Length: 286
DNA sequence: CAATATACCTGGATGC
DNA sequence: TGCATCCAGGTATATT
Image (tube, rainbow, N blue to C red; front, side, top):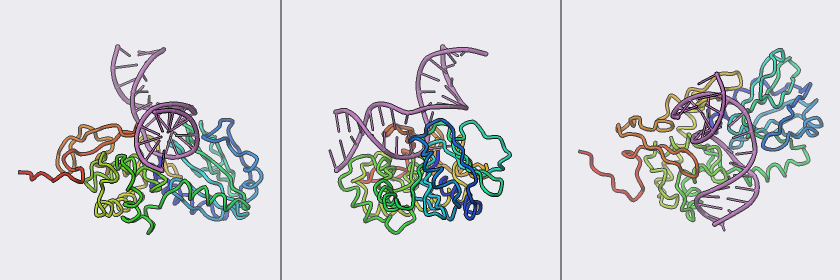
């Protein structure tokens, strides 16, 4: 579910609610997430402390506490964070509930449990940074995301450019939906080898990534089946999708039928009329 | 090292 | 109605 835009929308939703609030009670489910719930650390560092700020790194949310510990949350495929009245009965798949000092509760709900929660005490700040820099690539909105970097990183990569774009260690936050949409926007075939993309191609990818991710954030993210923002509102970017999920439908630009293939096990959609391999000379259309 | 396969889960859609 | 099968926004780990 959540790619960079959905995680950013979640962050923006929490920003007016969390900073300044103290955690009065911590409750968890008995199920394990991708990693076991860090119960001891939650009791030790999150309980009794107050939130100070929220950062996003790739698809990770970093909830920083006054005591300098950090609660790191990844939404996986089906994770949702919401802030609701503590009177509302807990829902199925609520795995972590943090009761705040204003009778609201921050709830992490995740049916598939591919999400993860970790706690990093203040004395492990450098460990957290190392872990993040090892696993999270450049942020699409940062200056480090540029044609030089992508060209350099892709030199030894023969894999399809779509898989390369989705590699979180290269670029942070671009998942299946947005990789499909970005490649449609820049008219590059998803199967083109990463190391066949020219500098000017990468320049387009950089600009398009920012454009599309920004639009998606403004639309509140994409709600394909179940993404909801922190206040329970769905996103609307799915209404602007050009290729994702549109197998057999007409291309919005050239009316060709959208194709669906599988790359690295992920559904891949593209327009055979618009999206070409870099060395393909575009055919003149009569 | 790079690329691909697998594993981790639940639930909704689809087909018989 | 029930049941089997397939598919889904991600990513760490194993394998080739």
